[in-house]
Length: 147
Image (cartoon, rainbow, N blue to C red; front, side, top):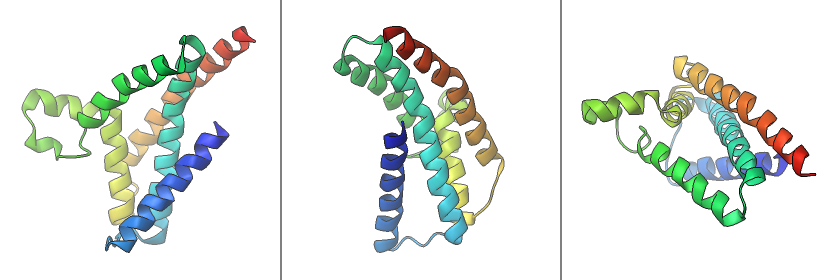
């Protein structure tokens, strides 16, 4: 999990640096960028607990990879990461608005673009905390049983 934190941090910094290199100018300034990167790392790390737990109960690495794709693919594509939620059909917009990935995406946008700590940031942090509170103990308990 420590290695995941480092990997997510490096990937986030490289992503922001690439954006800066091609012309992105975040309105949130340095603090907004640091906040956005930190939230991205925390969100990735919290989701990693789900996959860590799956890794302790699945039979193979391939099954963990397949299950994780079945979780992340719909959550990512049924979020506001690619299109604004208000442009979607009502039934899909309702799902997108409660999708935790949408909250993280909106929160990171708020931090990077405006430097604003909005309600979306609170919801994103709360969602990450809930995921860690549920899956970290499950992963540790399941790992301990296998030892």
